[in-house]
Image (cartoon, rainbow, N blue to C red):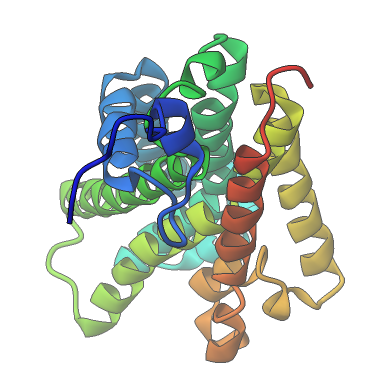
Length: 277
């Protein structure tokens, strides 16, 4: 094949950035690498990681110690878990805390990842990059999901160390199964928080994404009270983690629909992004 001839138009960086290459757009691997560097260097992501991992572990440990001392308020908050001994009691408390705090923490992280481009005024520079804007959105989501897996593993490790520090000793197969629910709940919580990315893009800032996360939490609470939560993707992960026997396995299959729909809508919003409105 011959190269370009004199007079032929050669697309510039901006044209290349807006020309899709397959369903993921142009330069996805570049977007992932750049977004990973941003996340690693971010104090916000580091703070959320510490609060979610260390904070949940310390809070669970404190509640168990307070319950052991006979604190009536803590015993009332723990409910049926107050009398559960050993690893089952520790994991149960961690799951309750994570179910409430995990979605909020992940929603704040996503709101920062997407909303900061508008808040800091860096979104204008993205229009001149040789990377398509949908690829940037997918790159952010890919880094976010990878980070959630790291958080899940770290929290599980912290809980295991806390259990050993409490003198619970080695656990049996049932205890290992209970402990394994922690990383699964963390990752599923990250998946159902993904609408924050789309709303942060539409709202061009952090606050809309955080507001969307609060709405997700409220919807989950209402659905749980209405006794239809097992089949609501925003509720199923928490219900399954706390009481696996009450949630059919098929109900958990609804959870991936949330990140798939949110990711598609987010990529569409970024592909249509304009600086003037």
